[in-house]
Length: 266
Image (cartoon, rainbow, N blue to C red; front, side, top):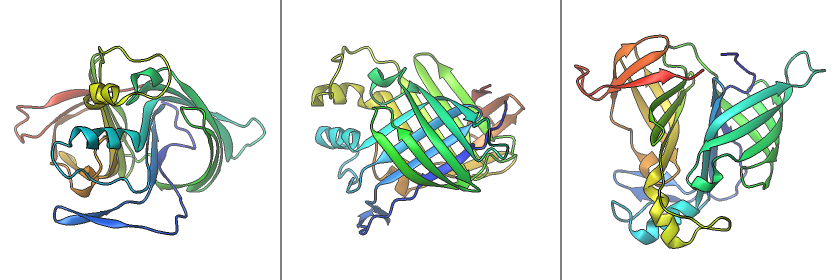
């Protein structure tokens, strides 16, 4: 896989004047708006959440809370292509074309959106559109580059009806899970509350920091698309019972008895 100047884990640098905190369990979370994008091996995941997005008061969230969580975030995942400007030998400017293959709203699958980027080390100016055509002009900060561990890159597990994708950089990750939806949705327009509830469990994604060893890894979510407050706790530790160049076996038991296969995406 050809690596690109945009590879890595990026955070949008918002300049919001206020930052509210609320208690969740034995910690607290900020209600700031957030946006993170991870690029690795030709795949991307982007998660955005609105400011004021409150954690659910019950678990699982109530129907009203599920609708609110769905409407206060956006996410998309899929393939990307980076094209360097022909007259830029240093690869500081280019264009990123995205094709959505996984999204909370199944109608967004197949959408395309593009942006122009000017990269200066680990900062970037980004101009373009989001998956819904809204204009974007932002400053991004790269928190980590691709990295060189065996886990770095893009991985997939599952099948066409129950898909997982894991993207890993030097110090961060993004993971997305998408299940096939059989309900009939309106062709256009905003989903009604009943439609949201019908598709809510079909998509999930989160992103954050990762700590890796040769046989295990821990991930600490910063943000989640379908569950505000999930990012307040570390995920259970994963064991790597087998690590090869193009295949991983990941599970929770240290003897590998529950490990599932992941295949490197090219």
